[in-house]
Image (cartoon, rainbow, N blue to C red; front, side, top):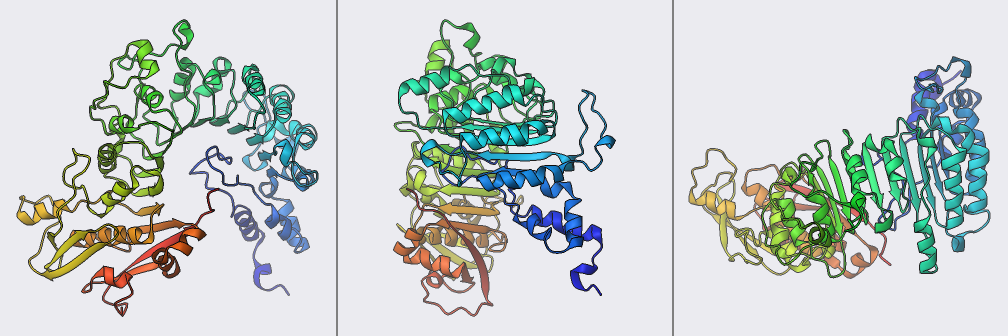
Amino acid sequence: MSTGIETLPRSSLATIFRYGAVLDRPDESQTPFLLKASNTSEDYTYSPDFQLAISSVSRRWRTIALDDATLWSTLHFRTPSDIQKARLFIPRSRPQNPSAIGLTEMGYPDYPSQNLLDILILTVAPDEYIEGENLSRTELAEIFNTLLIPETLRWRSFHLKVRDNECRIQARQALAHDCGPAPNLETLQLYHFQDYEDAEDLWNTIQTPPRMLFRNIVPNLRHISLVGVNLPWQSSPYLAELESLELALHPNGIRPPYECWEMMLRSPNLKNLSILYSGPREPEANNLTLMWPAPDSSRRITLTPLRHLRLVDLDPEYLISTLELMYLSKVQKLELDLVQEDADYSDFLELCVGENSDTSSTSSSVENLLGWTKLRSGLFPFLSSLTSLKLSGLESCSFGAFKRFIYSAKGLRVLEINFASVCPEEEVWRLFIGYDAGDMGTDRNEPEEGVAETDADGAEVELKGTSDDLEIKTTASGGVEDENDSGSQGSDSDQESAALQLVAPKLDIFRISGLSGKRIRSIIIYRESVLQLRNMTVGATVRYVVKYTSKMVQEDTVLSELVAKGYCWFPNDVDPADVLEGEVEVDGKNGWKVVIETKLEEEEE
């Protein structure tokens, strides 16, 4: 007699199997692309161990698993053993009754979504290749010729990374000629990166004319990522219907002409744009096909649907010239990793804020060539609607520009900062403990020590800034209203409350890296204390995530303690700084608990 899970009906078991099969897949709401163009972390790969395991438990389970094509439709190739698995998976992913499949308007089989294939291929550089352990040109030819090309009509997503010229040539032949149309393809990511032995090898690769892919028959293609790979831009009409676009690692000579760049950005449903050392090809004086429009022309691109913008490793002058031809009104998520030697991103930050800045001394080659007049106001109203900001790198900019930028994003719900890569670290982190909160027009304006405030219970609070800690003291006094209270009449206590400004007062998640434990602790103390003063809910509504490395914990006793505890507890009637120093016994009842999540990261090489 069956007991336990064996008593579940077939439909329930099938649901459990589908859930288990996708547990370790990435969140496609964040990005549809599996390969990372800008960091050294390992690319995502999917392991089919779950479905292989459940199909071996019993005859009943095996029958249920084999009847569900979705369990077998993900093909990730990283080792030769993955090729053997694919030989099993592909037949299991096909429709059980092919004769029942109808035709689309274009005359291609109208496959149900459960029969479409999601594919990833990772090859390695020649000096990393080990036969039997990873993939290179021999295995790539086998994967294309014997497995994937016959199934092109069922491709839903295709991700490919190649690391040498021979694999690149094989891929070009397959995608441009052998595969044929891909009517169900929705996501395409092509990644070519290699270490060139000399400038001639690089030149020969760049000068190779790109080829048309899938005979240009990709009617459902909506997400495309090209890393070190270019297309015949002017003869790829499908680029005008994108929802996600990532361009990365393109020397100027293979970047799209501005006309094609404009076509891609004017896609009516473009929601995600990621640019990493790429963008439109710079104009040339004697080539009209490469000219850019003036920034005050009617050709300014309005990206109303755009919600996520990511900018990485771009020259500041080129970045400004490119963005001045856009109008971004509803971007919600912004990621910046702008680190170039001897570059200053102050003007870019001022442009984002929407204020005029003195830029007469800096003109880009694009602007000089076209004789543009700089327009520096009203281009980026999205800062008011920005809900998520990630700053991985912004090493070269003025403190004043950064200050105006960060305080302008008042609606942030998620903030992630690597303080070690934001300029200048010694000053920037102080913004988060109340320094320079008063005068937004100067680069340095240390607050006076001893600024008084009052909390919700009528206790006067004195906040003092020191180099690494924030001292908080309480004495008896009167109450204060929330500075955002619509009924405020500008009383002295209101003015005092306004002096204690918070960066991003509406935060739900604050991810911090690149700071010592004492400075992280000071930020949390200040932030939670000011929230309490403003009668706002604290602790339970703000999620702090501290990123660290093993070396940092070994060298930083305060950080080590925060990681070990995983929380801070602040009693209502005791100096919070003393609690973190371990000098106060806490009963766990009179106060609030702030959970601190910690995330171990790999050491940088």
